[in-house]
Amino acid sequence: MNKNLKVIFMGTPDFSVPVLNMLIEECHVVGVVTQPDKPVGRKGELGISPVKAVALEHHIPLFQPMKIRKEYEDILSLEPDIIVTCAYGQIIPKEILDNPKYGCINVHASLLPKHRGGAPIHRAIIEGDTETGITIMYMDVGMDDGDIIRQKKIPILEEDTAETLFERLSILGRDLLKETLPDIVAGTATRTKQNESEATFSYNISKEEEQIDFSKSRREVYNQIRGLNSFPVAYTLIDGKRMKVFESKIGKESNPQVCAQITGILKEGIAVSTKDGEIILTVIQPEGKKKMAAVDYINGYPNKETLIGKKLG
Image (cartoon, rainbow, N blue to C red; front, side, top):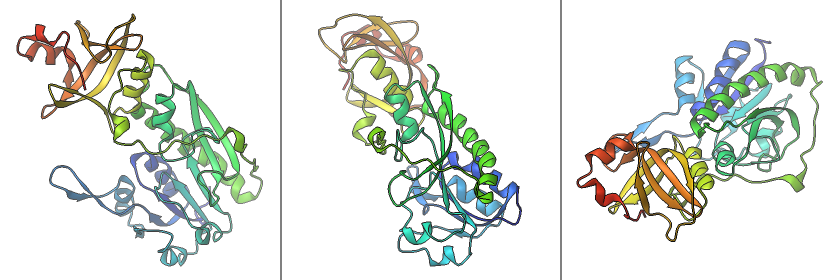
């Protein structure tokens, strides 16, 4: 590509790392912008973002503004030719967007204008989409509403979770940006305006949305569980305690009188009633314990026969 191309990269999670590594190999990354360090774990010790770890490893100047709309002068002092963002986590102000001569480019994990916002991968699975992809776009002041440069689709597989789809899309984003950057620099990249009438929004997952709603259909519950695996993870309550649910299977169809009730102990796991039948919880994590197969939980439960008929919260 062009080792003289001065790039500032903005990103935060693991998803962003393949894009940053590619830019380090192909261009001159003069600065990295990522979210401030945040407390992690029970002890609340400050943890650094995956993007910060890469920047430190390569001794790249690092910026972690609390509010980038107010703290951008030092970033622009590096005089970048182009700014690339990928899952950064803050709205970029116009003062930054208007600065680089080749513009600000975003790598977004959806087929825009569908799934604008911070949780496009989670919500694509939760909403039962059969395909998704990557959009390379010029950034604008709105939320993911800039002109589209290039897109590439991939199918969402039946067994996909948010984690597996994150991994596939992060690599796709890296490769598609690598293909697209030369056209952007050469001034030959196409610009296609988004159709606002087709726009949908995928806001970050709320705490309330992490709790499994067994009053929905088997398919909807199945999609909720895999769409939150492995972060932030769906959960339910059993015996008044939180139980995370990582994996499930769609069980038999029926017309239960009561939803969220354990209806069977199977060799695959715990069958629970939903609006239209059973969902089988197969991989769980009881409160205070390690992640385990649901059958191991069943075998360790005192008087496991008493599980039948128990209501989950």
